[in-house]
Image (cartoon, one colour):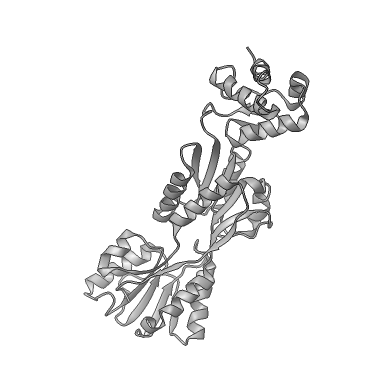
Length: 337
């Protein structure tokens, strides 16, 4: 029994299309052990000869099998069986920065919304361009869909645009790819600027508004732009420091901690000096989570809804449409101001 024999069996079923003959025949061949992982598939030319079907019909069937993660194409070598998980409708490559708390929220919501018929393989690039490029090279042509949180470096645009725009979704950070590509990204500058305006009465209670932002930070530079724009427009004594110095917290200041390492150091020092958060010093944070809700009566946060982003990303994949959406940040006001 060969793959062609399996396809011929399905050809006898008049209620099926030619596309279904090829796809279902291949799936049954995998299930029955006729095809195993790493086996080479017949070339398109050979399939034309053996099946009598058109090149387009065979190509489309192979593309469907690729989307399901069952076969992959290797440059100059042809098509190969890549998985025996035939119950999976589609395989998804998910490339994230790191598995931080908010990335986990995204993944959990994404996984739940997609359901059991999708296989998700997760990769992390850690904001390293070489790692990012290497992962893209390794996963290309192996998955039915690609969900990518990119590094915001314009040099990566041509690399990403080599992928099929119908099978890629950009999430989290934004890169201006060709308009055919879909994205669900955070909008930082205008969102943060507007939230700071909402906090003007609280901000002006303090003698200085200090933000720590490292040069070449992995954080979007739009955060810095929003802070400068707000401070200039509303005559706030805004100060930008590259890093927090241990013991540097001072009474009467409001601190905008855009990374959690700085936040924990500052809160520890404030506790040692017996400063009351929200009275002696103010604290504003980026990206909310349950700990920030619980400590010091609650820390005020400007945050994305990563759960909603994950749900939206999954719905986009299932709909197979086009999505071009910027998600605004939310202000979660608590007692720390």
